[in-house]
Image 1: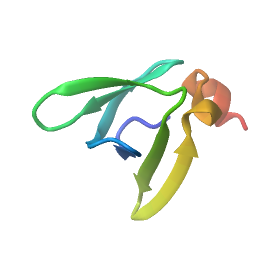
Image 2 (image 1 turned 180 degrees about the horizontal axis):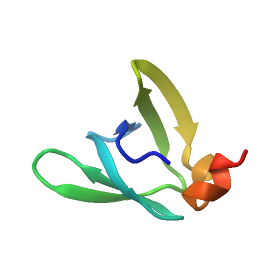
Image 3 (image 1 turned 120 degrees about the vertical axis):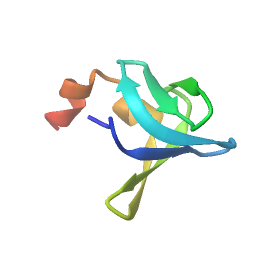
Image 4 (image 1 turned 90 degrees about the vertical axis):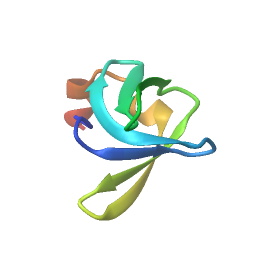
Length: 70
């Protein structure tokens, strides 16, 4: 459910647009390449319509439709 949103990985120099999502990973388009980031043990800052939202990877370490229900 994060596909299309801009994401910064906190504590690293990695940011990009989410182009795919699995239960355990996010695939980011960084402009020059694609990077797959593990959700667990990472912190993310999402840019959702101009609002910055901080999310722990553990909170979304589910299939996208599973956490969308909550």
